[in-house]
Length: 379
Image (cartoon, rainbow, N blue to C red; front, top):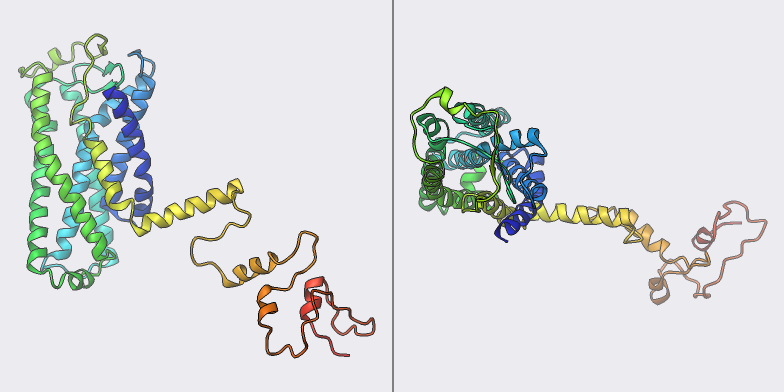
């Protein structure tokens, strides 16, 4: 039951984070882009694994498991690095040494964020071969799993990174909080003078989101080390030949499958936090409206698909005029003209009748019934 709930939560979390990710992608926010990328990717992989291996642990997709086993190591680290990049950016804004952010400096910061948020996880994936005893693991309800043994390279190349990243992010979070408390009255002016495109509202949301990550991941990273030590069978002396003796084999868990822990739920919780802080903002709401109107237009749920914002007044007036045409094709005079006729119309209202033009008055012949009502022709 727990595995089923975890699979459903992973799939829902991946879907909920698509709109905030697209908004950050459109605005080139490198830190949130990397954060959304890792959250969507990992939750989607968890959902696919649980769906494909819901009833068995058969080796039906070895290449997929090879990739998934590596990404399960890189995903949590990628989220931590992206969170660190966000806090670093916010700390630069409130720093007294902050200079005006230009397009060139913003580009350099984006390159740094992408290289750090993607480079370190890729490095962890590449060095996994050093302490990898089996090709991958397979378990019912979980699918592909990462295998490792507890040796000194395991600590240096993998286990040590989450606590270090969480601690550095915690330092940035404390620094940002101290600066905001000290200069809380000039908070908006400080952000405006930095030259960044971020608003005070988004600054606060990013700061709260990143701080929640820090408070959650710092104790979790220490807890994960204890879990790995318990589940790996204890520390052993490193030997390449001994560790890779069964490298071609697959480790199955047919009788005693693993259970979900708080570590498995960490990326789901991270995705829900992102949606909580950015899924209800004005930027996300505009995307929801656009998707709704596009879907309504495609499915013909509405006869006239109205733009969500910025509609052309001429188009709106045209739709109002077209609505005054009866099903038989005859033109009906607008109701406002019946109640309050214009001053330029000195003649009394003669009823909903078609204006008959003499054949001799051909100076401006009306092309349809509508123009015949509103066109005055001189002899």
